[in-house]
Image (cartoon, rainbow, N blue to C red):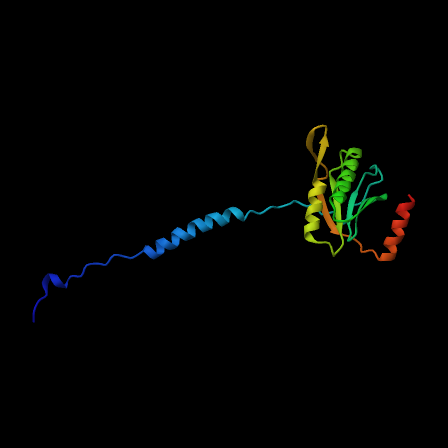
Length: 178
């Protein structure tokens, strides 16, 4: 039997990590880029209490509600009723009327910070978010400047009662008479 001697000792092979490094070169920038685009925006909403009642000693104050219907925006007070109805036409004039009405209410009640949005079930999410943005702040032109006015930042959300066509026609006639 022959002895092999030095030929029998095997040298360790190098670990081939080029495929792993190629994966890291592609994966790390991809994860960094997508992390920038995955920001989360959170809006704080205040839900009305179930047992909220007015005390007789407190003066009645404005409880502003905005009912978002399929064909109109109804701005109303919970105690007094309808303040203004704005027909939904999808035009820019509709949003100008809406903003003007909100600013007029804010001028009359400067301390009021809350509003309740009541939505019919068929209202789109996109519409709700746009209305929330318009209710929170408004851009008003004064002189040559464009000012941002804080309107009603405390927003509560609820469900609106669905009106039938007969009730809507009667309320339109009553609103026209006033």
